[in-house]
Image (cartoon, rainbow, N blue to C red; front, side, top):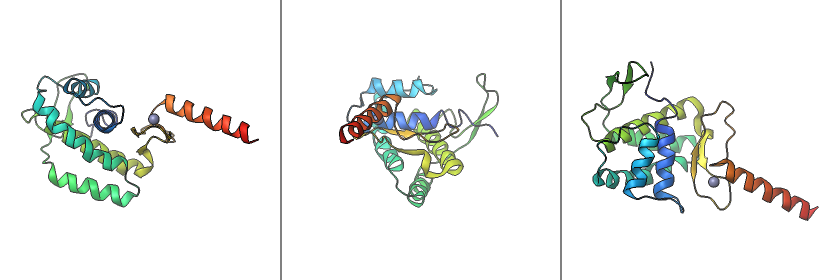
Length: 178
Ligand SMILES: [Zn+2]
């Protein structure tokens, strides 16, 4: 079975939305949230201020998933959300992907489609890789979340910038101490 943008579409969109809405340096304006969705392959023609109003609490909910400290906690959170968000799978064939499954039919509103897709893609990530692939950036001054769908799965930072900054600081501390 092929699912829309498996692992890159909803997972990346979820992390980006959480960072936009809950991050200390995030931008949760209507325009910024529309850009997050458009940048991750969602059709945003139906985006309205009401969509943004629905997406902000969803971002705060998903942050708890990225912050989960045990697999059991992550599973319990997702199972609760899977009960709350109605799923109506729908076959679509609208682009170069060919025939594929959407988790919500085209007539539901964009916020609902976004909730269904992010929830299912995060569930798939958890099933395939457990909790090690999600987290909050290890840089001491960064609160951004990440999801790692790389082959190696060793990611601990939200970005190369945070990884480099933290490694340089650790190197300098070692040299100072030594
Ligand atoms: Zn970071």
